[in-house]
Image 1: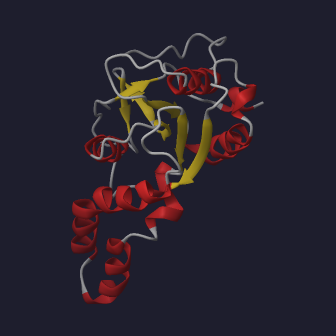
Image 2 (image 1 turned 120 degrees about the vertical axis):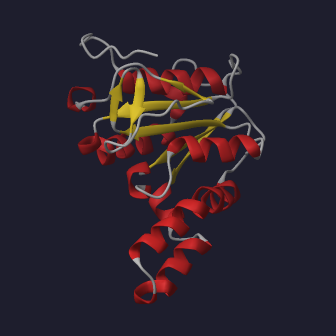
Length: 199
């Protein structure tokens, strides 16, 4: 998938909301109703605030279903509720940073989705939109693709949206300079949210 950074009239934030609304209305395509939008990392928190405002009344969006609902879940807040976070704190000075990082990378995605799943209001309903914010707080322990894979394994039917802090390299999302990955099963919004889209 390619980005369209040269098209200044494109608004990836508006397109993200529009795509979430369409999926919540029942549109699906060949993949789950999971959507990722790239965002310049310095604006990740501003985008999160904007989306928090949006979910308060998503029915203002043209395609949002009348019976649809929406919520925001902050990944940084859910992160500290995982057992592996408690384990890392307990290990503290008794272990090496590398061991703690390896443990987090092995367990965080699964445990985080356990916590996340319990917070989703209607995980079996596609008309319910869940926006996952503050993804950058999980670096370097897990990736968006791992979270989406875990949500897919749990057969979550809710429409899931993730603002992704990073770059687009060769049409793939690049997280903090790490190797680019394909983000199946997510639909990717072209372009990247920049300051101009937050005016």
